[in-house]
Length: 152
Image (cartoon, rainbow, N blue to C red):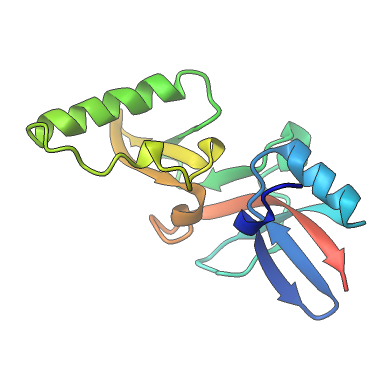
């Protein structure tokens, strides 16, 4: 695997949990290379540390993460069809509201993987545009991620 720097590591007694994979295939490859086990974890109840949690049904859908929010919210993921068009519309609206004083174009930020971007809608209105990492701290959301458990 080329870019291991962006991966998040959580060390526990006897093992390490690795998260923040860009693709499901990348997680599978990492698990094979490190003789690790592919697992699902959750960052729930405001926790900064992952715990085993299969609520996201990530393996079933071969997804790297899913956000858990109250039912009134709709989440659009960076890999969803139409996401890029929606994101572009949001940026154009922001530019108009700011009278062309361009806010930082986070959509083009090289440090944010395309698949990490999410748009959250409530009552048909854009509530926020964020990333999977930030959702843990915004809106008391739960984050479910695919991870690799590597024994020490």
